[in-house]
Amino acid sequence: MPSKIEDYALIGDTHTAGLVSRDGSIDWLCLPRFDSAACFAALLGRPEHGRWLLRPTEIHRVHRHYRPGTLVLETEYETVDGSVAVVDCMPIRERHPTLVRMVEGRKGRVRMQMELVVRFDYGSIVPWVRSLNGMLTAMAGPDAVCLRADVDLHSERQAMTAEFTVSAGQRLRFVLASYASHESPPPALDPEKAVETTEQWWRDWSDRCTYRGPWKQQVVRSLITLKAMTYAPTGGMVAAATTSLSEGLRGGSNWDYRFCWLRDVSFTLCALLDSGYKDEAEAWREWVLRAVADDPSAIQVVYGVAGERRLPEQELPWLPGHDGSKPVHIGNQAFRQFQLDLYGEVMEGMHLARKRGIEPEPTAWRLQCRLIDRLESIWERPDEGIWEARGEGAQFTYSKVMAWVALDRAAKDIERFRLEGPLDRWRNLRATIHETVCRDGYDPGRGSFVRKFGSTALDSSLLLIPIVGFLPPHDPRVQGTVRAIERELMVHDGLLYRHGSADSPAQGVFIACSFWLAHAYVLMGRRAEAERLFDRLLRLCNDVGLLSEEYDPERQCQMGNFPQGLSHLALVNAAHAFVDEDSMRG
Image (cartoon, rainbow, N blue to C red; front, side):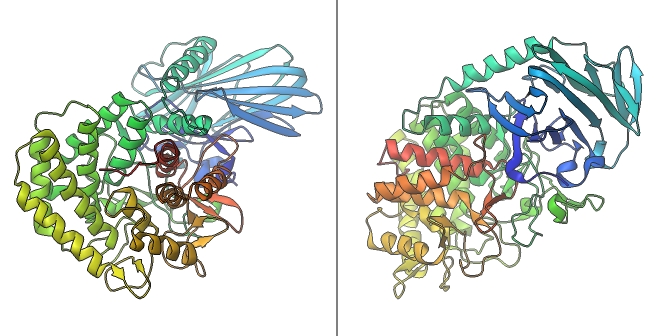
């Protein structure tokens, strides 16, 4: 069965990404893009659904780390006969997706095994494996890969295998490249040079980070992870590298996260700009403009990495799911949902980019005005909310708050940048929405904002009320909301459920929400509590600094798609709040 979620590390080339387990198996890889069909799908099934195993035949201890400031993974295995390291990376792509794995003997002599099982189309297609000019190739339909190695390779049972011994000081190289089956295999590359170049590329990138707070190492690791999940040709950032890792404590909540959510626009721009990555922020802003285009009525919750709009959802019944959690989905039906909050996310992102000196695209303001025109006619409609509730819509309080944010940032753009627009009308509507939220989204008896109008339930997204500037952090209604969330949604020293009740959770605690709480604590002047909570959350990271979407406090394991962009964005933004305590947006 596949490893636990926290036992995986990420490698990638800013086009796609793979997951490498502590036991040396690459169990997930989609080629050539994040959202392409997987050729290694053992993460959601069994070894016969595709993987690349490279490890000693017996293992006593494992230690792994990323080389500092990079996405080059080094895993050291200790055995009774010695020790060996496996170095894994994906060189930054020029044309062909490539994986480099190097085995370095450190001590003694260690017996090693390799098994490469390629299964195209999410484990459903067994390729034709053959020997060609000193390498092995596997091809089926349009897809092909070739494996070059410094050891003798064998083909058996539609797999490529090898057994060999590595001695101290010895280095053995393995290179897997992907190509179109109607073309010739790509030329061989120098593996050592590829690792060296990849390491330097990542180090040059991470050295640009301007964060100067106490958690520099963790912030840089999160930023590297976010960069690795950005599709370089377009600038779009996927929510996660995987699909169908369950976020439900009893399984079943399995969704495909290999797409780009407008919900993440302002979170992403804040994290990138505050950390010194203006080019990446501009690329993300341009991706948003292209995706939304010039038709506000067609704005979507989620898009493909190049801005694709149709993401039909289907099940893959031949895959048993991670830890037996079915069904396995590809595509995401959320693209059909209506979420009011994304108008605020887009408008805030555009406003933040202007404030930070990103030169506006000439037609951007015209698009923003059309978005506000659309919002004026729909802001009272029920929607599916930030958590994408599947079923009838509702009057979610956070959605209305973000409608206010959209009007607020539009008015501020006119005031600050002398842009043309109906300022008085937008100010009036902003005031109307604010009054509506404070009247219908607040429960005076509880002294707290509530999840949706007319309800008594809570929602951790309400922690963003002071962060987006809807109300000041010391407002009694904000203070009361935080106390209510602490009382009803908190477990285990600051870990929060998204909504519902901590007494009967259907899902794990949502990691980003707890970082929002730490951020809110800073704004409220509760700095010592904020620091304790932030340190507590950092301990949820796995041994190489990665976070999934959720955490199961009972089993003490990560849950949900991995690594999760929103978790790492929330980490970075909360870390910056400690440096700039007046970190309210707007």
